[in-house]
Length: 527
Image (tube, rainbow, N blue to C red):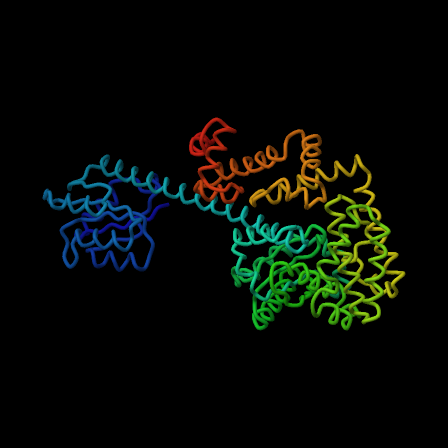
């Protein structure tokens, strides 16, 4: 029901208007009456109305002044003027102040009903438009959040071979300034509370609470705006991760809020691992690893190891990790094993916490490679599921014995020519699907996957059935049509979000592919 305010200094006129039409049938309700413009403005300040029906000649504040005030303060109000004075100046004033209709007393029943029906239709149309705009904004915000979270996962998994890739997308997601800020990661997981005999633990296991757990975490983060971003890593389905630029005081408040809300609404005790502070996007993988390490070890009888392992910088340098990664990808297992044992022995001589950190850093590197090569890890190999396993890796031999089988399995996927090439193309496709919004070049992708550009170009075309450029264009066009259909974004925005250098190039490319311009495509979209 839309709310109507009747304004007239004569009570009999107000009563007559109330009896002239079937208000409920029109979807309207008389929500207030006023004897002049001043009374009406006071009521409008206290309650919400949709339609104002007003006389023009009234004491204290006449209809002209009321219309003028309503136009300034309540521009969305529908104004309907009914007066007994056939003065053209009143009609001009009504039109000037956006009155929807102007009628003379005594107004006919049908005339009033028709005018109110038109106003209700206007209100219905406005409400529909607002609902559609809200739905579109929600879809766009969800799309943007998904892309941003995907980008953060790629950062922490070290999935950027070039610094330019990293920084281009950081700017797209308003994270460019974070490159110079101290950043800390949080890893949040669940464990059952102590239950009594009347409430068995199996009634509420962490595996059953993934969705509500995520929702509570997102709600807890909402108070911190863009200063804290949540993301999920498919390698750790039971965990939620947060990256933030909050200071120590704010971080402590966030941690307490998470613990309080999760315990209250989920009925389970959260455990939170906080990583060491890192600066620059290149070091995010280190900060992420340290939060995972803290979560895995702390409060499980390994507090000292967790504290030492999560402090400071990464145990292995970025160059060492790249060398080890390259050995696995090229199937150079002997070289990998020699380097692996050397790094483990050096860390073992320094301290147990450094040794533990090297194991985790190597494991996370291998886990990312396994994911890219689609080489599934067995449950016994997943340290996040079995954090106590690290305690048993108390020698170089044991640590090597745990890590080497994983590396060999990944290398086997790469060195088996037919399966390896197919796996390679799938990995390239996945990379393009996740990074189509940045500037992608064949030489860059070839370098990333350790292939000569010419050979890679021919291999991709043979396996994918289309050239590299065609595939990238198809992916971008698919996303562009989605944005044209679901949003009202400008062509400039769509070009930026889909990886085209500018709106003009995007439009010409789009027309070449679909035979019509983006604007024409948008006009023909299904309602």
